[in-house]
Length: 250
Image (tube, rainbow, N blue to C red; front, side):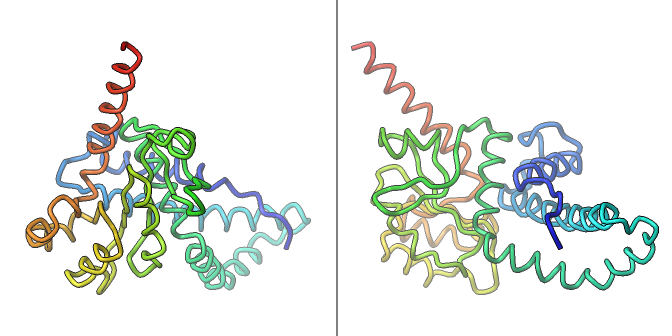
């Protein structure tokens, strides 16, 4: 078919983020009611980004056919789009499946930056052969200077979460999963994660609400609400900044 003119993933995520803020009638993420957990916001941004992607893809197909001289067949084009819609959905689903983790990583990083003023970078954060997903405040602080914070991110625990255990070889790190799926998480899964060496895991708030009391008794400080992540990262950065400034003054 040729190249379609589509916005970048980051542009779509940014538009989706703005739309969610508008939905809640706020200008800043921190103004959203506190009873709306961070995991829900991430999921809403992802769903809105997927909706926008579908719309942009349809518009891009119409524009492509117009450029090829089919402008007088607009009604026919729209009919073709109806036929294409199911295959487009399948295509989007396949793309989402193959890059789903990467998309949700970008969404979480975008929310941390835009919503909580937490500096971070995504992609190719090499830690002795293992690639983390998000570096706070940047890759250099994690990879070269060894004082930053590394995050491993999965959309759900149906993805290969065990492959992220190497992130905990790095001193400042955590594992995050965003969305609860059927049978995704239970106490047995928590036991498996701890046995695999997972030392700090941020889980969806609704999951913590169900299992938090038992998890805290058995594994104190290991499992936390996803909504705690921004405050924890800000506290980490503040502590590291104070430590660095103190060292310079010696």
